Length: 158
Image 1 (tube, rainbow, N blue to C red):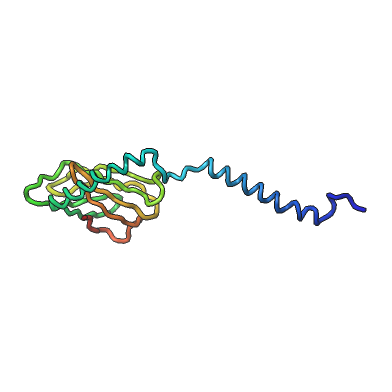
Image 2 (image 1 turned 90 degrees about the vertical axis):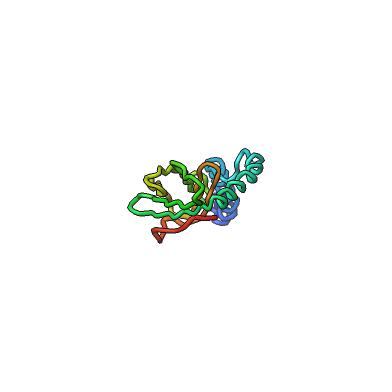
């Protein structure tokens, strides 16, 4: 008679529980090591901010704001049109929010280079869908886009 450790069926029976234990340990390691970045600590405060952001969208409509975004040669250029009674700011902020991971978000400040055109360097963005917010003073324009973009020029308006 052979010892138990030389029987192939014993190892077959041990294989399934052992693989479950190893898989569980690997899953625990991934859960501890990675940050999903989806849950925010101040969710209540962000919920209260919704009314403020809706007011910024309304302000953009009142000012008659429309933006044309042009991406060329690692530069981003935005042409901003508004009502005659609104004075355009000297700089605007453009946020790129990645659709699932906040670690890939970018923000740039565009300086005005002439009457209605703003320019800055295009940040390094990974491939994927981004939600863009163009902001200044009391207004905000929003649009989603897939990067790298296929077209050089597109409009941003509410």
